[in-house]
Length: 290
Length: 221
Image 1: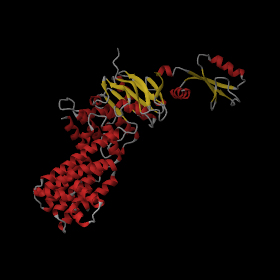
Image 2 (image 1 turned 90 degrees about the horizontal axis):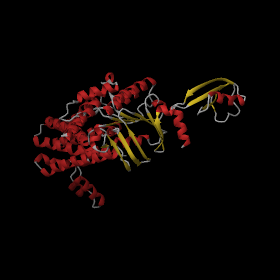
Image 3 (image 1 turned 90 degrees about the vertical axis):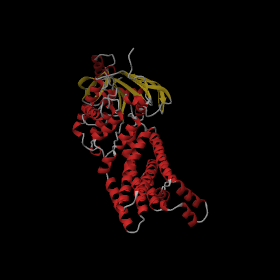
Image 4 (image 1 turned 45 degrees about the vertical axis):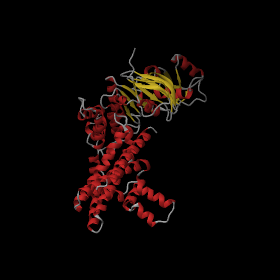
């Protein structure tokens, strides 16, 4: 039997659920859905900040509301806020002190150094929080969440609103933590942010998981794009009109069969290409069909 | 022991706040003003008590008043600490600069140990109360508390009863002065009144408990 890093069993309350899910060590699960779907509430429940009406949430067997769970579960909110007059190092040291006990071999200085390294905040360590940019605020959020070797990370919109470089850097750091055995549950309003990171995706709508599966399976579907010289008066059955022409999921049929349909409708085909469906398309389709 | 370590971690943030925000400068200005006033007719004991009380209110505004500082409670409580430890640490962070200001004023005006103790007790009582008030009602309420401590807090309830006409308002005001942290009450600590000292410590403890409840309520919203 697999030891789960995080389990949510029949959790319901505050517009979320009932739902159940489990995260194994080293897994990165992406939680996607529109604003108001319940992603943040679900994460806050998993972090023990909000109590569900029913159900049980455990991190490595410990109920998340138990103080001991705070040593295991790290949470970074979607809008990370820290005391503005302190420097990055002072903020991380403050949290590190909360993790150390007298019998502990770890020192706040050591934990701080480790957390700054994990988040890539070394060069910004002596900058005041009020002067930090968005990406560094998210890095600080990651540093405090991962502090003290926590084994479950709940990251709320960690990659949202970042430029491509910062997003790639943070994704790499999260992936490195997962490679070391940390289970990660990360939310994103923009599913594209998770396409190169999550190994499993859960689509949330109105507080319920309406679709879930490994990313490779969800993105397995192919789409035929047909570029036309002129927009069609009416697309062939199964196709939809796009800016450059029409497109349709192949869904079992061959490219030749789909093109034959276009020819039968006397469409002026200039070019065609087959691409893999994006996660955003999968999520939007799931949302529309539920 | 864990509780004390968490309180200590919270308290250690006071130094950067003192030196990097306007808190340090405001406290110094307040102290200088009170010493100057005591040299120009203000009762030295009143100046020391005002230093403790007003210093605590200013510190509460700077330490728990900013929205970012309050929002950061939620992140702190995802770590191994408790809201009571956070509230206690913040209360000490508020009281200590105010107590230092009261001591500084006591030294400057050349008063004895009992007077300094009265200043410290005042800082503790008003610090706890101001922290709860700022967390509950915001900085505007702190301004009202500041004005109250500057003017009304020095008036004993007996004087109010003698001044005003009988009625519900008078009784309410007199009760507030009797029960709440007020400078007229803490003057007696200088002459060894233990009841007044207990009253001050009770307000400090009550402030911590209230603040702890408010922090818990805030993060579970």
